Length: 152
Length: 112
Image (cartoon, rainbow over all chains, first blue to last red; front, side):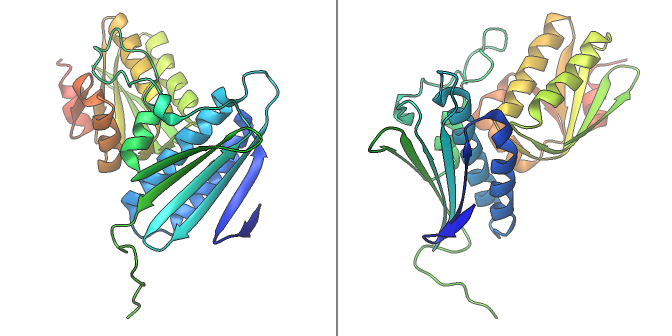
C-alpha cells in the first residue's frame, strides 16, 4: 500500500481472498467521512466494481492485478479501480432485472445498476497495454466543491 | 457480521448485525438456508442492526425468498435501516419482499 497523488491505494491480486484487505482499505477511508450517505454510496459502488473485476475480469484462471485508489477530493470522494483484465465498459452492462416477478427474477445482475445510482460520476477508460480504469465520484453534501472546511 | 437465530412459534427470526457484503453474504445465506432445511419455511430477517448491504447481500435475500416460497413459506424483513432501504428500493426488492417496522410486526404478519 502506498500513498501519493492526493490519495491512498492498495494493490493486490484479483482473487476472492483479496476482498478482505480491499474492503478493510475502503472501510478505513470511509470511516472518517462526515457525510455518511456519501461514504455508504462510494463504499457500495467500489465494492461492486472490485467484486466484478475479481469474479469476471480474469476468466482464464490466472488472476491479474487490481489496484484501488481512494481520494478525498475537495467536495467529493473518488475511488479509482485499475486492472489488466478483459475490456469491460460499464455502459455495456445488461439492464437490471429489477421489475421481474420474484419467481423468475435471476439472482444477481444489479451490481452496475447500483453503481450508477449510488454515485454521481462513473468514468471508464481502456488502459494502454490492456485493462480498465474505472473512476467513481461521489459529491459530499456537507462540503460543496470549491469550498474549504471551516473549523470553529 | 453476526447472526443470531430465535425460534418463535410462527416464524424463525434471524437477527443480523453488521455489514452484509461480498465477504459475509454467503454465511448469511447459509444461515437462512439452515432454517429452511430445518423445517422453518417462515423466516423473518431482523435488519435493525444492518447498516450496509451490497448486491452480494441482495443475492442472499432473493435466494432465501425463493427458497422459502418454494417450500410454501415466506421471507420477510423487519427494521430495515435507511441506507439499506434505499438499496432495496433501487433494486426493486421492496415490490417483491414484505417489509415491517419491527420484528413483532413481521412475526405477527404470519398469523397464529
